[in-house]
Amino acid sequence: MQLKNDRYLRALCKEPVDRTPIWMMRQAGRYLPEYRATRAQAGDFMSLCKNPELACEVTMQPLRRYPMDAAILFSDILTIPDAMGLGLYFGAGEGPKFERPIRDFMEVVNLPIPDPEQELRYVMDAVRTIRRELNGEVPLIGFSGSPWTLATYMVEGGSSKTFSIIKKMMYSEPEVLHMLLDKLAQSVILYLNAQIAAGAQSVMIFDTWGGVLTPRDYKEYSLSYMQQIVDGLTREADGRKVPVTLFTKNGGLWLEQIAATGCDGVGLDWTMDIGQARARIGDKVALQGNMDPNILLGTPERIRQEVQTILDGYGQGTGHVFNLGHGITPDVDPERVSVFVEAVQSFSPTYHMN
Ligand code: CP3
Image (cartoon, rainbow, N blue to C red):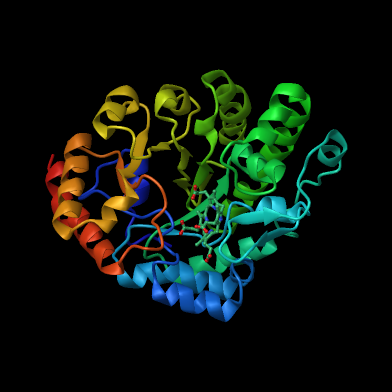
């Protein structure tokens, strides 16, 4: 079926658009009262992820409020380690945790590579349900965590500030970490290709923690595995390119290397100037970003001003997907999101006149 709104896919392929497309990381989430209600109905967060009808419902919620140019699958990056048997749970008011973290060689050897249509079938069912429900209105983005970012949660046993357990592994038993990353890369390739087969029209890889590494270690432990994934992905479906976006938070120093993987889009956090990023890699890839999500806590005037600054920073022409530099936070007023989306819609056409 022909997409009614394909601005997001066109911008990632650097084809002309009438205005800059926009979507928001974590656009379905706790800042929306209707999300909190559906989540309460599901019980807990993972039960919401594992119920394709409810996952579809929360995916659609932000699209009913705002004219977003893309939908993103409602799920989590930690579905893969959960399917590997680590026992994912979310304690009340805490981040994610694993009952059985991965700490030694034998635990890595024994890790299974999940079959996406078996252990992760609920994700593929959610993709199929959402595609049906979207009915061609906007494209659906599938996603996964990067092997490095998944490994940080699996080895640390949850979120971390120092990454000392995984870095201890990196600097004392690097071959064990490489074996883990290799299994994760294989798992991610299968998982994303299954999402594409189920109907995802673009995919994004979240490397939330690549930025805590030295430049050498970033290349060896994070980027090289994202490279394997880019090389292993199905890049076309239904006669159309399936663009892939890589996002390394705090990866601004390494943009050239990220762009050299052959990805289509590079996600930018807010610590980068988007004009400088374009000068560095804009001839190779499209850019996604990069407003500080906390600007949404500011006044409507301040939000509009920031949107204008970022559009100006990127400048004329296609190749920009407007987004936040990281996920929206639960304390944002949904009215402020309307101001944000309307500003991008009303200010951006003048950047696409020729
Ligand atoms: O963007 C979207 O709307 C799609 C859904 C999505 C979620 N998580 C839903 C979610 C996506 C793309 C993710 C990715 C994700 N999950 C990342 C990478 C992106 C990033 O934010 O850096 C990471 C590191 C995770 C792991 C994870 N999941 C954490 C650290 C948490 C706790 C966060 C918190 O603020 O408490 C989650 C839970 C989670 N994933 C929530 C949502 C909406 C909140 C769960 C809830 O309490 O309802």
